[in-house]
Image: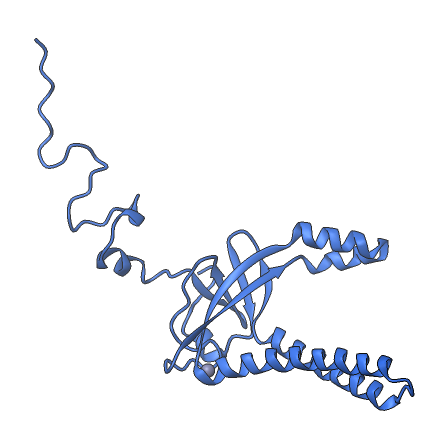
Length: 204
Ligand SMILES: [Zn+2]
C-alpha cells in the first residue's frame, strides 16, 4: 500500500498565494488594495516631449488633460485611428490604393479622456458647431437648387457655413489627436504642459 508524501507545510505548491500576499503572476485574480498599491508607480501613462504616451487600456490620472484641474472631472471617450503618414505618397498611384492601404494599415485606439467642465463643454461645442454648420451648408445648397431664380445669396451662405464648419472641425480634431498608434502605445498631442509635467518620462 503506497502512501502519498505528506504535503509541504504552509502551501501545497509554489503557485499558491497566501492571503494578503501579492501574486505577481496572476495579479488579475487578486482583488483588494495591495495590487493597486504595488502598481501605482507604473500606470502606463508617460510624457514624451510635448506628447502624452499611454498604453492601450491605461487609465489616465484623474485631472483635466488640458488645464490639469482636479475639479468637476468628466470623461469623454475618443475613438481614434492612425496610419503612417508616409502612406500619403501612394496617393500619386491612385486615391483608391491610398484609401485601401490607409484602412489596412490603420491602428485604432480608445482614450477615455478626463476633462474639467470648461474643457468638456469646449470640445462638445466645437463638435456641435462643426456638425451644425456643415448641415446648414447642405441646407443652403438645397435651397439654392430649389430656387428658380438661383439667388446667389444662398450660394454664399452655403460656402460660408461650409468653411466655418471645416474650421470648427479642424479645431475639434486637433483638441486631442493621435500622432502615432502602435500595438502597445498611443501618442497624443494636445495635452496641457502641467498635466504632462506630472508624468514620468517615456523610456526612463
Ligand atoms: Zn480643463
